Image (spheres, rainbow, N blue to C red):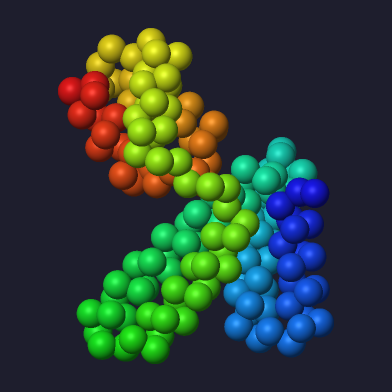
Length: 152
């Protein structure tokens, strides 16, 4: 079952169980996916979003909510921070298991070897390779500096 189908099945289950918090988050996920579908309509790639694209959308949604949690906590709005944390937990159900630090290091080393990178100029190729293979499994904002350190 594809990611889109898993999300739709979870949405239907939340409707039946009258779980309004879960239902709201799942509807937000579906809306983000449909926005991407609509954005692609005019382009030559009119097939809709793939599972890899959905993983990217979910990763971005998770990151946005984690930033909101920090902002709410700094502002003393713990109730809103907790609601954001609950949304993160629901979104993460559809993301693959995050790689450990050792696995991330191994993936970076493998990507550098695959690309044959020798300098910082090859960073784009390495990041592209990692995103192609590990979307949703690692935080690319944290991976970038690690790649840079290995190449620098």
